Image (cartoon, rainbow, N blue to C red; front, side, top):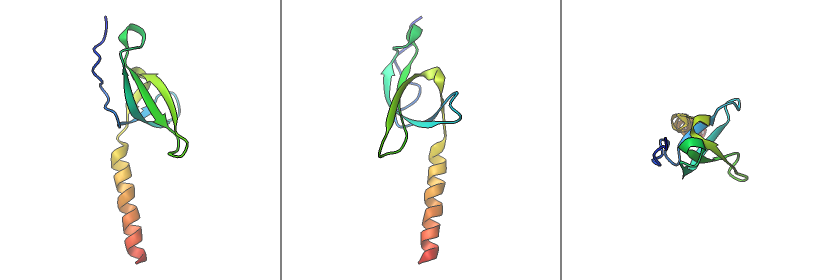
Length: 86
């Protein structure tokens, strides 16, 4: 059976790479149904912004991570710290 080439995880989504002790990454490209038996392949970026690293993984090797809500709360806490300094 060949899987459809419609991505289940959107570009820009934050994911956790399974079996890596919680390593987080961001989906930068849906490569297509290129894996064994049509498995979806994603290109991920991880590491720092100054030295990003890339890896291609099968869809069953990643899990979606709701990191956007945590980054928003971090921005809110930084704003409140800046406001208290003023």
